[in-house]
Image 1 (tube, rainbow, N blue to C red):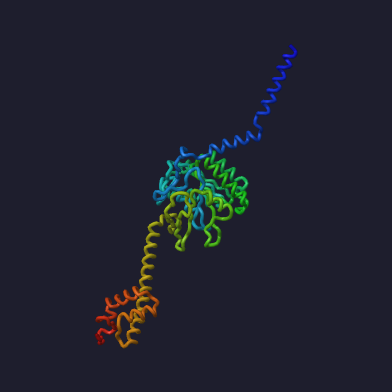
Image 2 (image 1 turned 90 degrees about the horizontal axis):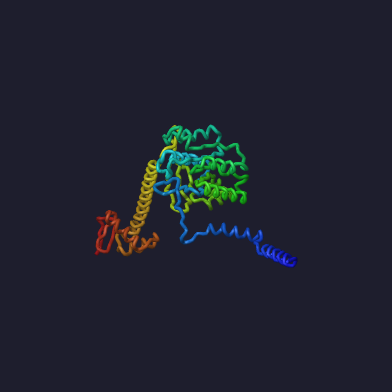
Length: 371
């Protein structure tokens, strides 16, 4: 009996040891868990992917898709804040100028890290004027915060807290540079953009980030490593620029899909944002007309100079000469092709500046032309 119990105990111990040896290690379990995470991220032929849900559109082209981050760039004082106001007014009322909302009564979270409270309040006032909706509607659909006093080390967590609290469809961050200690810190910049990507995917919202371009007039890149990473990850990047007349153009230099058509806004005499598409179209038409007139004037001057050369050649050859000879000398002196010179002489004959009889040509209609 004692031997039987010892035998059973021996088997139990062996089974325990065998089970322990066959159990996966912590490293193996971690590996399997990681593989399972990656498997869920695989895209296959039968993977069903939801189409992008855009927040806004311009002439039918969608911008600022939800579950993605985006950018709005421009030089300092180039009208970026005005562009945001137009976008917010469109989201509040359904449309503003050529910008149309693609969402039904969305909530918009606007975080301003640059302006003082009095200036931020003007955003509400202008959006109310542009959209025409009630105070109650704006207060329940536009969540506007001035975060100028906040430090970079709390801004991201504060943003996450506000997004989780209000559940907006669109988040506008006016002053992304304030979220990092330095926009040239590559590690911090990459981490910030990564965290914003996770946030917009988890909360099903579009996050639009305003960032200045580099100071050099010819450099349109967003500032530092922060701008580089944002440009790499953004679904849409809009750009605002202001001309000498104060007209703000809003273009789309970078888009993952369709490129938004350029639209224009400006300020009225009393400082309000107004549509400038018609004004810009008129300016462009006037510019094209001036350019056309300048080209025509230039061509006429060239033709006038060419005619004087041709007339001198004719007079140096006794007042009349073979057209073929004139053609050759003009080609040589002016460095033109035979076809160009031939067409020029024909135009001069049609305009009765030169006269032709048989194979000879002259600049004097009364001159004797031998046969």
